[in-house]
Image (cartoon, rainbow, N blue to C red; front, side, top):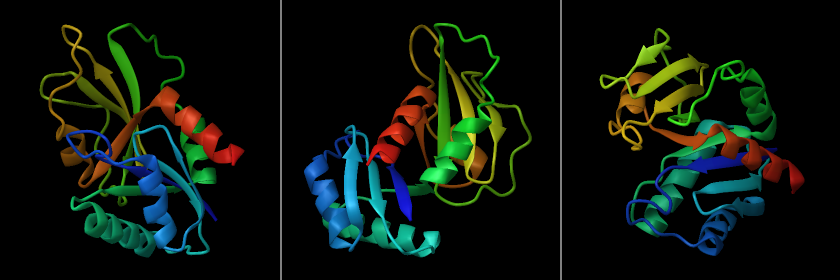
Length: 179
């Protein structure tokens, strides 16, 4: 099975990891055809392990031991990522220069799903749609700055998450399918 691992906290906040090192760490777990895409913690690999929870735990445990910091990991298959992008609740939205469209990937199933749409206290983030594992979020820039409450989404979805811009997620899927 081809997986996409979306890692949180790679090459941000002082947690610098070269992609060569990241590929080696995934290889140490016996994962096959390991590749990375851009410097933000997107890893493609193959595994016969269909137990997502066990595979996620193994990756997170290994990365913590090797890197010395926790790396929440969101696993998706290529097919799941295709379905997520096909949902595209942003289609038909009028997007302005002060908006950024994001997909938030949950490490564990979101339960219960929040009542939507859900706004942050400062009204600089809006969750417009959600599934069991993903949420679609609009950022509203205020004075050119991105939202400041980094925990709003995590609190709303009930656990560790990572996000990617919608257009970047399209490129991640294309790269995963190309290999």
